[in-house]
Length: 70
Image (tube, rainbow, N blue to C red; front, side, top):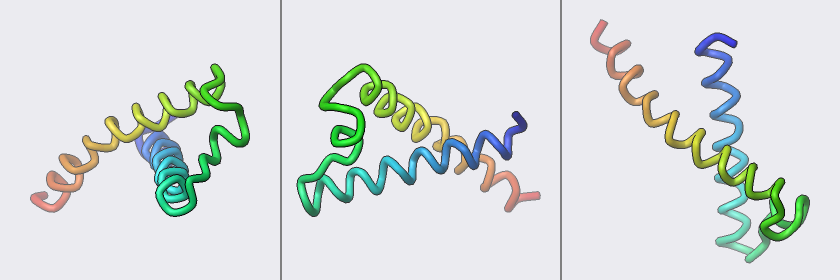
């Protein structure tokens, strides 16, 4: 998978995480827990992937900055 494909995949995971946090904040409804169980092994993997995706996408700031300077 090239970098662009990885970026889009991880961005999709982060958006899913943001929507889930919005649902928790506005309605106290955890979509991941609803679909996969409250802190089941599958929901914990999803939470971990969303977190790792967010950390990876921090590097997007550096790449955007380097593109602007080019």
